[in-house]
Length: 181
Image 1 (tube, rainbow, N blue to C red):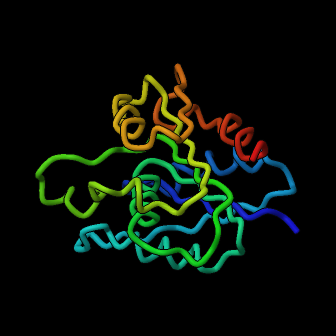
Image 2: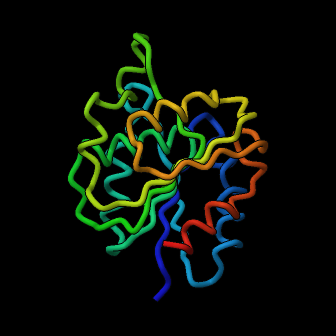
Image 3: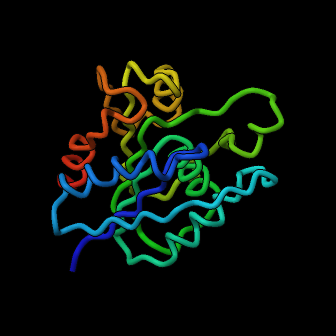
């Protein structure tokens, strides 16, 4: 039976389309022993979390135990928010977060995206959590990675020299960590 990988896309009007290349790269690097599930998130601009938290929970609920959770950008931050604020019915083998924003500020639109202050202690126990961020990310400043390192010192952090926000559409480093679980 192939291992299941749930991939949550990044945000923006073309987030799903832009991340198709990330998904293809990951599938190629993982090979036929892994099945990537790539649902298209529907955005509700009126919802504080754009309606993504409910969708993420529904997608996780459809999968088997030991699912591998991978997410990019907005999707990564909202996956982390979901996992820290909800009990999940499935055991995750690992959590892989790419170019993850750490939301701060007092803007109204950001309030539904922010993590709770104690989010780290509310994550599912015994999970392998990996963060990936390129130093030349043009969308999410590299220093957001340091915010996560402060809150989650036990996680694994991969600092990548170049590749921008999309890691040059090459997720071989993520695939290697998944295979090493």
